[in-house]
Image (cartoon, rainbow, N blue to C red):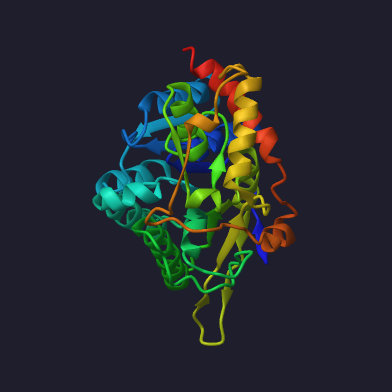
Length: 351
C-alpha cells in the first residue's frame, strides 16, 4: 500500500537534473505542479557531450517556474548536507549516477564515487531531514545473468555481470537498510533501456546514428541475437511522476520497530525487441527524417560481432507491480519513439 502525496507547494529535489531522465522529469514537474519549488543539481561531467546537458538546462530555465539549479557533485558530502539544510526538500528523486556498462569496465572509480559514495550521502541527508519520499534510479542491469524472463522484482538478483550493475544492486540494499533503520519511505525504479530525443549519446540508437552519418561501421553484438526492452523517455517520466506521489506506507511491526516502507518497480516497455529489428527500424526512420539518404548502403556499414563483457542476452520487464499499484504501463511503440528521435536528430545534426 502507498500513501498519496500532494506535491502542491512542496519542495522537490532532483539530482542528475541535467541528465536525460532528470531533465525531462523536471520539465514535467514544472508543467504539472506550478506551485512546487524544484531544486535541480548536477555536476555536469563530460562522460558525454556537455552541450546536450546545457541544452536541457536551458530548456528548463526557459519554462520559468520555481526552479533553482546548482552545480553540485553528490559525492561531495558537505555540499549535499548544505543543500538539504538550505532547502529542506520534501521529495527527493535521485537520478544522479555514473551510467553505462562498458565505461564501468574502463573507469570503475567514477562508479564507486557517484553511485556508492554519492548515494550514501543522499541517504544520510534524507535521514536527517525527515523527507516524505525518496525515489532513486536502479537499473535492469541488476538482473545480470538471470535466465528467467520476464524479469520480476521478486527474482533473486545476485549475479551482476558489470560493476555498474553491482553498484545499482548496492543502492537497493543501502536504501532498504535506511528505510528499515530510519523509517524513510523509499522507492527504487529499475529502468529498462531508456531512449528518445536528446538522449544519451553513448546509447546504441544514438551512437549508431552518429557512426552511420560519418560513414563508420556499426557493431551489432552477439551477431544481433540480443533482445532489449526499449522504453521511451515519456513513459519513464510518466512512471516516475506517478511513483513520486505514492510513498510506501509506514508501519510498526510486532517487534516495535519499523517495517521498512520500501518498494521496487520495473519500468520497461515489456516488449523486448531483437537488435537486428531495432537497427532496421532505426535505419528506416533516419531515412524518413532525411538524416541519411534513401540509397544509403546499410549492409556495407553493419558488422555482426560477438558478445561484449558486461552485456546480457535479454532484458524484459515484468511491470505487473507498477500497473497494479499505479495503473500505468509504458506503451510507446519502438517505431514511434525512434521516429521522434530521428526527427530531433535531424535538427541536432545541423546545429
